[in-house]
Amino acid sequence: MQAPEQGKPIVIMGATASGKTELAVALAKSCGGEIISADSRQVYQQLNAGTAKPEGQWSVLPDGSRAYLHQGVPYHYVDFLDPRASCDAGTFAEQAQEIACAAQARSGRVIFAGGTGMYIQAYWNGMDSLPKRNPEIRSRLNDIAAREGKEALYRKLCEVDPAAAEKIPPGNIQRVLRALEVHAITGQPLSSLWTGKFHCALPVQKAQFVVLEWARPALRERIAARAKSIFEAMRDETSRLLDSGYPIDCPALKSIGYPEMIDHLSGKTDRAETLREIIADTQAYAKRQATWFRRYQNALTIHIPDQAHWSAEQEALKLLAPQNVS
Picture (spheres, one colour):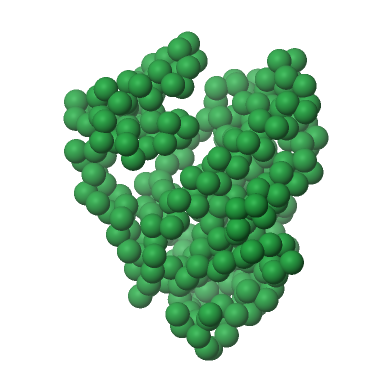
């Protein structure tokens, strides 16, 4: 695959803890670009440690617009949403389009970085035409999950839409909820509304798409190391959110790790058990992400066997070099 043309967006994808932010920042510093986050959890204010949000601060750019700066690089679509609010892929696609246009006018290069596959899918390939979320139905389904367990929701999905249940992992509760919500709103199985867009090739004529794919043992080690390093900070920020009056079922606190931390703060689990649960859930999520991104076979995949073979700066130089990338 050729290095990206001048001004062509670069899209960095991969599982959690795979180094997407590192590579995006190295690229931005090398080419003077700006970054748009495609991460559905980093959008939230006050959720920092548990979402691996890049450290930064809000500043005014030369054109008068405000931006979140990380290491001096504008890092868009992070740290702006109240923890009680929700954000979906369609909203991201719409708002990111405006951000990308403004960023390209300022800097000439836009870099997307994130592991929320639905966000990337919505922006670059579009989405099926589905009804908007219904808070009442969603609340009712969440009540069922709280009362009877997440497994009850998946069993219900198997009954009303077996085709969707075959495609959606039982542990992906958000997708299970969405499938049941669509069925409740439309009276039709979600699978009957699919058009096949999810299996489309990426539009490589419009952008350079890059997937970071670590050997599984190495990625599991990175996830475990990160969870251990952020545990205390994550506990503190979860405690602050609860003390500030945010309900335990608000959208932000459903992010991976926070329900486990809430149980820990309430005395249900000790530190060791909580850490094990967070690591296990994050590793399971990383596996689902890797499966998602493998569908994009026309993306450039960077295979990383272990930590010794990873350098964001070197990968950035390779991607920007005017020659073929191996």
